[in-house]
Amino acid sequence: MSIVSRYRLRLARKRWLFRAFRKRRELISVTKRVKAIKPADILLFSTLRNERARLPYFLKYYRGLGVNHFLIVDNESDDGSHDYLKAQPDVSLWRSAHSYKRARFGVDWLNWLQMRYGHGHWTLVVDPDEFFIYPFCDTRPLRALTDWLDASSIKAFSAMLLDMYPKGPINTQAYTEGQNPFEILQWFDSGNYTISRNKDFGNLWIQGGPRARVFFPDAPERAPALNKIPLVKWHWRYAYASSTHTLLPRGLNLVYDEWGGEKASGCLLHAKFLDSFATKAEEEMTRRQHYANSHEYTAYKAALEDNPDLWCKWSEKYINWRQLEILGLMSKGNWA
Image 1 (tube, rainbow, N blue to C red):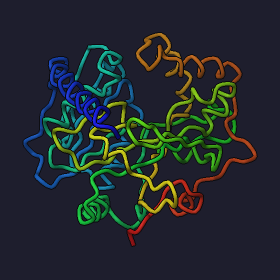
Image 2 (image 1 turned 45 degrees about the horizontal axis):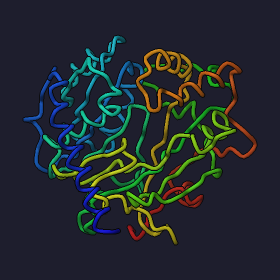
Image 3 (image 1 turned 180 degrees about the vertical axis):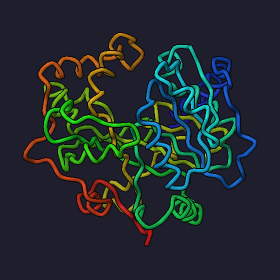
């Protein structure tokens, strides 16, 4: 990179950090239990709206992995999410009635909370419909992964977003509160992905899967990005620039080996396509709080009118992380 490009990215990082500092005023503390956080604790940060049915399993899953404390922003839920989270002993909760879109889709809020509480911790940033898996996750806790990353002087760990879906139309199988969503969403696309490198930030840009195939068939380049860097040994000077797709400083984005996939990586199993998806898409179309004037949800709404079946003859049934490594969607690298 040229000196000018490096300087421009440094200014961008300072701008995001300043924005996060200003946006702290949009957050109102509901239950602040951060004094219970210990120096070695693994922290999870998330922002949400109306996810009450998902929360019991979401919290159970990440507690089981080894997350010690949850720091969550509730963007004006009216379905009971607020009261449920408020009652959880390992959750610190903030609420905001301000625009999710004007907070860069919640990134400013979480950048501030990570700046304030995440420094020196391994931090995991995920949505309530994202479930982190990593090599040996069936036998080793998240602490084993972060200890290995520390010993290897690795500060950021990538995970490809893997859209999971049912066999048959989305709305035919009802999801019940507390249920493992992957009892319903058992299938994924094993191929159909495109990869390019972002020349400015250095990260790989991944698109494809069922959303490109079904919702953006005529413009796959407009399909949502699937590359994410959700697990980071946080420093107060770091900042997410674009959701968890892109980080600054730039070096934190160099999480893949293009030539052999030898760097360890994981996946985020994406539980988006439950029976509530159509209702959620309709709500977000009305709110217009998502990226590019909610063009993603516009595509969802148009396709959902035909009650599509995301399953196809090339769909693969999920078994475990080893299957995903064989398919080249994640890697254990040199972690043995």
